[in-house]
Length: 218
Image (cartoon, rainbow, N blue to C red; front, side, top):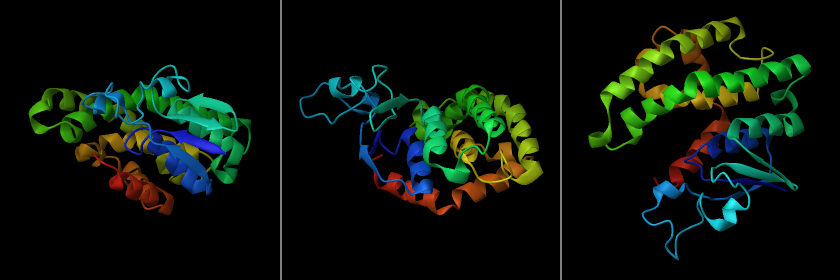
C-alpha cells in the first residue's frame, strides 16, 4: 500500500496529482508544515513536519515523503520519477533515453525555475500584502525569463517534454512552473508554455487534486 505523507498545500500536490493520473490507491497522512502552526509543540497540535513520529519517516523534517510497501522516499520530484517507473505505464520512461530526459527535466526544474518561481508565489500571492516585497518578486520574474524561453522552445516541438506524449516530466515541471503563474507577463512571449500549462491543468487528475487542495484549510 502506498502512503503519501503531506498535505495538498505543499509539494505533496505533485505526488497526489500523479497518483490520480495513474489511478493508484493510496493512504494520505496529512502532515502539515510546522511553520504553519502557531505552536507546533502544543499537546493538541496536529502531526507536522517536526513531529517525532514524522521525523522517524523523514529525519530531514520535510514533506512530502512516501512509504511504498516499505520503501521510504523523500523529495517530491524524485518520488514522482519512481512512481512513474513503477506504476506509470506511458507516464513513465519507455527506455533509458527517456529515463535520462525525465531526470534531466526534474533537476532543471529544481535548479533553474523553482528558486525563482517560489519567490513569485510568495511575494505576489501567498504572503499577506504587507509582507510582500515587489523588488524580490520582480527580480524573480527577471531571472525566470531565460528558463521560460528554454521551456517554450522545448515544448514548441510536440507540446510535451518527453516522447511526444504526456508524462511524469510534464507533471513535475508544470507543478514547479505553476508557482510563477502570479507573473502572467512571463508567458506573454511563451505561447507553447501557456498552452501546455492550460492543457496540464485541464486534465481530470489535476482538477481532482486541486479540488481536494481547495477543500483543505488555507
